[in-house]
Length: 166
Image 1 (tube, helix red, strand yellow):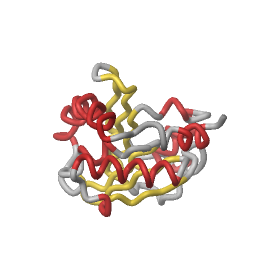
Image 2: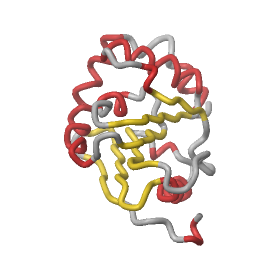
Image 3: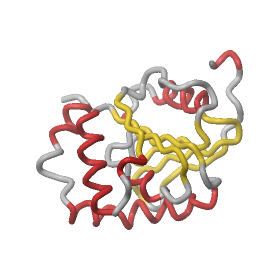
Image 4: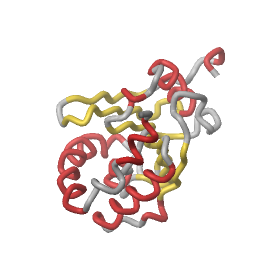
């Protein structure tokens, strides 16, 4: 079973309001740590977003919010459920369905923040995905990756991509 099929297989049996509410404190524990690093009105993308909970919890800091996942159905349905639970305006999310292992469908230096919430390890070739993150991230932009643990995450500022990487 591939990632897309696995994601879609969890739509019906999981992601009920009580489960979503249980996930929020963990995700908030790391979004609270990085919120001050994101300038107000930033343009962001959360890759492997699934629920888009990270983006929603940072929503008061973010301007244009993009969330991407391999399954359009999972992304649309689960992010809507999460938005209902949080009271977040689901219409603020720009949802995209694509495989993050290829070239990201955005121009160079498109985003102030590129984020992963427990999803980077799903990239078949992590180095390709990281190279693409660097390409679409503005110079000095925020890169954030969480492993799903309040104590294990990576945050950094990315220098501009070199011309041979574009």
